[in-house]
Image 1 (cartoon, helix red, strand yellow):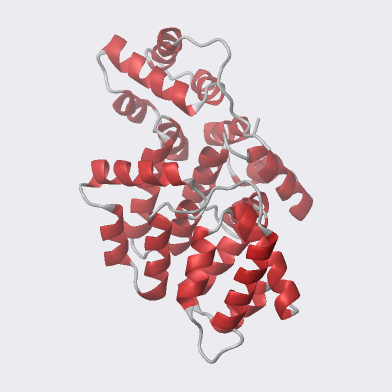
Image 2: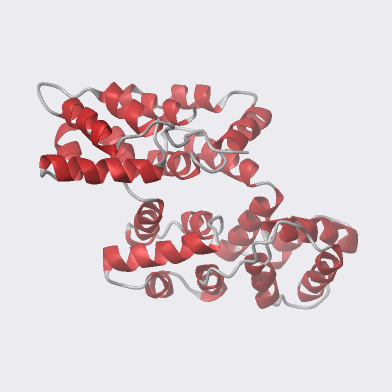
Length: 313
């Protein structure tokens, strides 16, 4: 299913840049114009608007927005004026360099991006932080979990659109032999299959595992692994089963309980807005019996809420 933000059919970067300049200049900022502009243009067009703005005004858009906006609304607006690779690089750095590594963010980003996107993320990371992404992963994580992340970083997941049933059965048997059938788990087999098979193939392997072992693969992961590696394997299996459901659960956890994990909330909405947000919305409603829009309305406020709702379409 497609995203909720699409390219504007009639687009002129200079005209949009003028609208943006008018919305920012003068007494008070016209936030509704900014919200409409952001959500009616795809990421590629927003970058062209940003370049046109800076060329025509001679000013830095990011600095102007920071001077006029604030809070989570400002963060979300700035995120939408970054390229997808720049934003992912920023979030990966934030996940590793803030107090305590946020391991599930690393898996969310590296485990759901296409190979070309991972290559772009690595280039953006090096440009922004003057260090290779892999170097920071090596310094901030450890053990088999680190090896899984480094494998995902290679951007070598197969991208076929169909599944090979005999291969799925063979992989399921390999996984069974590497885990439940032996004393001690061979994590390299799990990492190899979970990180390299296409998601169509991985889904077939997950289904085959149940036929081989008599139960779901999650049961094996729960009993055979632990800690960050276990959570990473479980997340990749969720993505393989149904990525829309995976992101719906991630969004729900952002808003469940006291307080809202706004950085995670805005990241998922922004990064999936052109990919599969319609699927995520359907999965959310089906799982939690409330629309994603209503959940967001109950947990956010002001212009920030208006922008997130507009992203949902």
